[in-house]
Length: 124
Image (cartoon, rainbow, N blue to C red):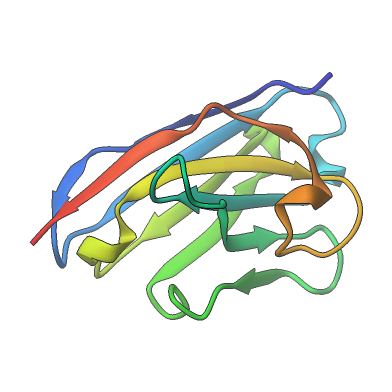
């Protein structure tokens, strides 16, 4: 079992910045591929935001956040970050961190362990 805990969500004005953090338990963290998803409302599916792999692929982003968001990791701290700049009202959502298992990086069904999420609200 891997425990995943997100933090850093807040209310911010459009154009502002936030940095989300995600800590995952386990000595094998450096071998985890980690991703961020977001969900606007409980009725909607979780949307892929970004993934940070341990292989040569590095980082991949959804088109909607490319150039504004950056995913990074600190293996010494078992932590992955999501730096969000130039925030827009449409970025408002609960942001989830997840540990990849198998499949497509942009498919939520490919992830085995999830945190409970952190709320990001962007006001216009």
